Length: 295
Image (cartoon, rainbow, N blue to C red; front, side):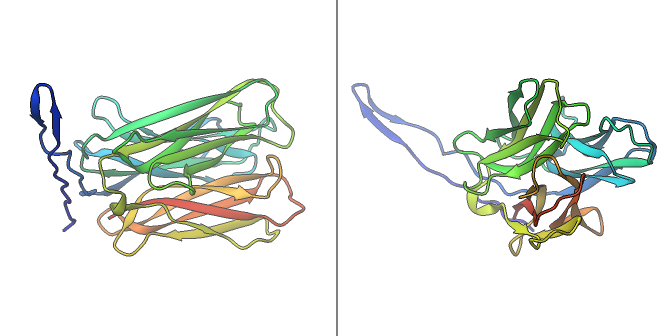
């Protein structure tokens, strides 16, 4: 049984009107009732494709994962987005082929991590526009004071498959409050305008009840790499992200970020990031996986 941690306080304000007593401070809650839901599109050469993993009725999305399977050459992920509308929470994953118009058969999978609603749970976002010809842009989204991060996501708008979602997930230099998303044009560039949006899922959970671990693959010139990221003991995954490092402009793309699933559609304590060359890379590079975890 997961813990429920309550924080109570009493504020006394002394002024001309006397003493004002306020009620208990808002309570922190643990993430309970977590479950995994997934959906995969058909295998075809059709582009773009969108997979939508829907939460069960009464559950809220904490975050999610996604992948491209089949023949992924010249196909890039462009959206990994948590969505909340009219109590129909979901996680949407999109991918698109670039201008080479590949004929291989491929599919997109979306995975949603869903849980019982949390106090003050909300999805916030921030968008950065990229003028025509821009090769890269990064956006950040942050939780307001008193709330901590339980999941994140990113989205590329425009780009026509020539701009990929090259980075998504928690920011490693802060504690529990901020996420990032980046877009990167491919090695041939993209002449049009596009934008990148970062999403963060926030709730009134204690900072001690969440974590954002990261892990790196080997630094070498292999064309594809996978790296596993583990939650601290006693925690499970609530969302994921990742990036490549030192790959050069648009040469490397995220192919998959997928969680461990336990029997009964329960999220496990780890996830795996897979990054591959979209065009050959003549240098050593690494894949850096990130996950959101909760107790």
